[in-house]
Image 1 (cartoon, rainbow over the protein chains, first blue to last red):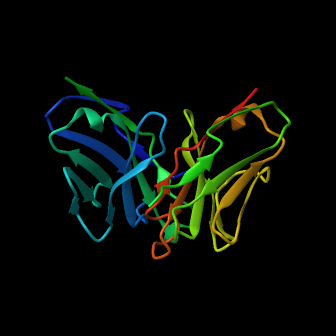
Image 2 (cartoon, rainbow over the protein chains, first blue to last red):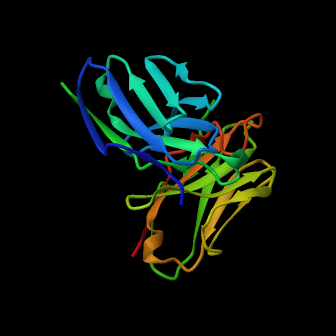
Length: 113
Length: 115
């Protein structure tokens, strides 16, 4: 079936560098996308969302980019900090949310000192 | 505002038993969703409740059920437990103005181990 996936299971970056986490989706009918951060022992934490009528959305130190042509979603984290270490999931909604959120497999972001 | 609260935090059961998990949403949120998280399958949607009614349901067998009370608190039940039901069960709530399953705020989950 159609699903949302991520390119890399693990991403290691230096503290202070920018991080880019990528996600490919296959359901062209998806109209809402979300990034979640999950720290060890906790539930997913909402980071930022974007609707399909937008290409870019910025938050505090985070930017989400949506490329509908190639069905690609990315999360950029500026000036990565130790507290950013976590697993990051992209998720999508289609059909009004009746099927729930479809999550990708997750990328584990590791911060090197 | 207090976040989503799930109890218990950990549970150990044996095959064939049943289990009930509890969730208290963020105050004012009437939509509550449940997800199962496993290393192999990732996060999967179980069901969503709104105003005491199951509004949406994922692709899980009938052994998985839930309900919501008038104060928006929710419970989910798994009967005849199987080893494969071992997972982190996450509850999430969302504001009324959001579409189903948008703007989800998750609890820390209940870690269920089936022996």
